[in-house]
Length: 363
Ligand SMILES: NC(=O)c1ccc[n+]([C@@H]2O[C@H](COP(=O)([O-])OP(=O)(O)OC[C@H]3O[C@@H](n4cnc5c(N)ncnc54)[C@H](O)[C@@H]3O)[C@@H](O)[C@H]2O)c1
Image 1 (cartoon, rainbow, N blue to C red):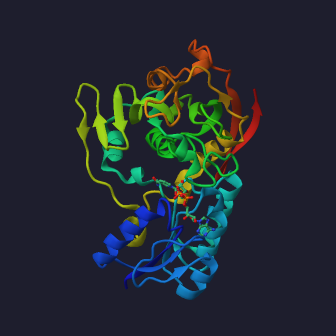
Image 2: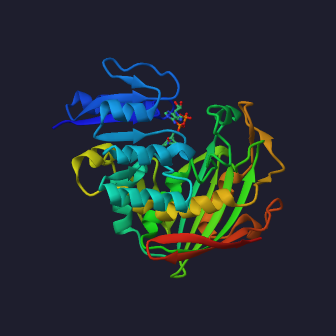
Image 3: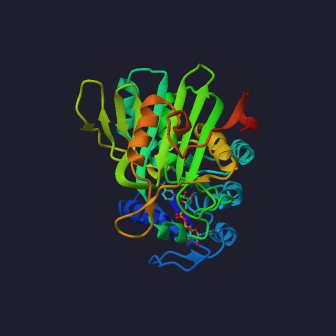
């Protein structure tokens, strides 16, 4: 039987899900059951539209639902979809706290439904090749340097808002953190050291530097910025091995970069009944770390900014080099003689059966 799939949150990034739905419907792999959005969206010919997900679930009873609304709205919609008997493709970040994660995991167990989280890079052949071939090492790192103009923070009411779970590593670079955790494999963080900075008038950070220390002594470091004039796509590193996760390119020690093409689509995987690529429980540590980042003290404003050449915001000169340096050394800016750096915020984690919790925090 052809699966009937609905989309909740059909504007914004939902447009890319609509393209995928059309493609798969065209191949006879699914039927687009409904679109749902609080706001009017471009209609999909022959597909019913609802402005409320509960009405949609009652009227359409879809087999699966893609939830692509802002992060802080995910949990109630996801719970309603599961209760209505639908499987879920839930956009990342899946939920905004460890408590919400546990509540959703309990609903998954209770209903027996499947929940896939929108970490599409986990389905890449490049990640699989990298995990197989990269040497083990005491440091796994993620680095990325992008540019987002001021208009990025006006695109949606929740952009740049602490309560809405935004922030460079928590949202745009969420894939970098998740890929690094996937590469680290069995990695239980016991502590987090965090430096958050901002270049503009937002509640969240747009430059994040973070070091996790695992129970086995390994470290996982992430250094990302949205205020760079020079582009660094997104690099996961173990020793000299490098995975450029947005482009699916891999460079192993002594080799040149090579593309490892191919991604298993998250929706296709969800509908196939095969083992999930990004099941909810695989994202538990991501959620714990992201929650700790969002709960940290407000980010420090950065001095010494320069206007971006296109005049739509400010950049931090040389920050592309800094993110790579932090990733390579594992040393945070405050440990690297950077004049503007402030000492890290620290969080301890406690891992227990089926859960991870931030235990204590101090400056
Ligand atoms: N996987 C990825 O690479 C990727 C990329 C971008 C965004 N995302 C994720 O997708 C989600 C949506 O992000 P976005 O940038 O599209 O946000 P957005 O605010 O631009 O769009 C969200 C859409 O959801 C609608 N909406 C909000 N609340 C709703 C509700 N209760 N019921 C129905 N519709 C509702 C809004 O009207 C809007 O059309 C977020 O979780 C984001 O992190 C994932």
